[in-house]
Image 1 (cartoon, rainbow, N blue to C red):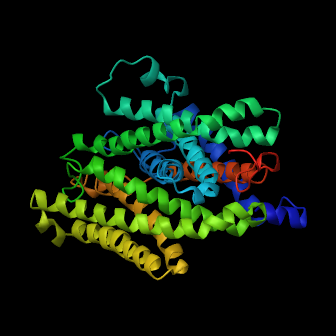
Image 2 (cartoon, rainbow, N blue to C red; image 1 turned 90 degrees about the horizontal axis):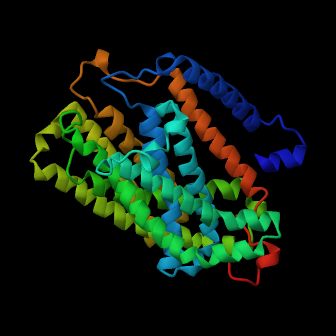
Image 3 (cartoon, helix red, strand yellow; image 1 turned 60 degrees about the horizontal axis):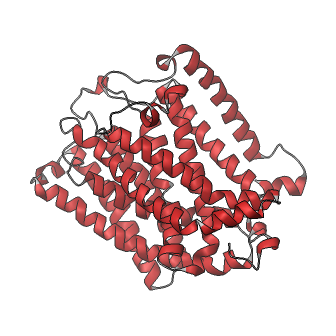
Length: 391
């Protein structure tokens, strides 16, 4: 990472070499996709029009970027000011996450100039996709405005504009929570129109609520996970304010995640019981559903609860990436694995190499952008010129 580059003065680190290979492959596949069409790089079909570019890049990306609204809400709305140092990293992660979701959508849509049509041209305001698109568009703008003070401090000479943005912090935070509530739940509502395609164990009228609830503990877990990685590679960029509140933040987020995951588990069981679908648990899909629920909800929830009770930070740091993987598994189950479950295996979808390369390409761009910003801008520390001001 950046510390290694600084130490040995070489660009040819293992990380940079791997990132360069992924970027080069991504450029090649991008050219193929936009010159030769979807069929040249994907396994999409009429039966499976949405693949991992939606299941991973969109559904997982939006859920894991929820750390922005959860952290800023904890600090500014609920008054946990001791977590202030963690807000900027969370906002940056969320901003990059949503920006890359929009970027990845260009590969799926195929006509980038038409991506704005649902917002400015199409009048289909009763469509759930319209609501999702509008909310993501506005929330991305909100995240950009929340991130902007750090960029203005880095460049210098923009105190007036920075001051205006700082004064808007509370309003932007509230708007961000409202917008996140809407589009996180609406992503789950998208699948309510396909009761015959989504397996009964995953299909439930509670899907919108489940998507929103899971986004909350996904965002909290992602903040903990991102912090663990950042402490390893960017510790030299962190000041006392960030480091001083980080341990408390991890325990507080562990407690919150445990409670929300317990509520989410109750919703999963209610959805199963409401239509009396217990018999599906004794099938192959039932075993997979139990793996998701027990292996990636119950167990990490228990680890979070015990970790908070015993002040065992190691247990909390195990539960966080475990939960992140569980959220990804859930989104894959709803959008890919349990979708079109009645089709014969020959007609089932499996991502092509080109789709996997593009997903890795998008993630790599995000990691490189995060590294570039945190090594240059005041993300993990307070800019010396603003130590005595409200920020």
